[in-house]
Image 1 (cartoon, rainbow, N blue to C red):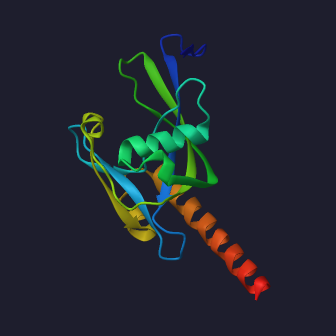
Image 2 (cartoon, rainbow, N blue to C red):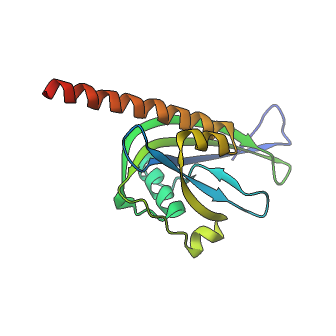
Length: 172
């Protein structure tokens, strides 16, 4: 936590988080997973993400958090690419703190299609996880930042598929 010299009554609380856009296949028909978060407000669909533990790499944190929030085992998640980061802040509670969050996202492939919602995930406010097409996911996600990351993932997937097509034609 650091103090804001311009406004001595407000302190900043900085958070570093990581998450993933997880694909069920590496094709033009790929779907991605969103989690349904319900913490007593209106349920909302989000990309899985969470805090980085001390000494943990961003990539490892992203895989762990996706696993914790979807039930997909870490061993079943392959990182394909770094998608960049988003930054945002949220209202202070208590009123003298302003929370600033940086979230690093990775494009991932899941070797399984099954989710496991556990007591832990329910306690975290996660009601379910579901596979969505890219278009449907962009429509239902709650925040613009999530939508932007999904759009980045779609572009990277297209580039990966184009490279696979190029190497397939070269081999022929």
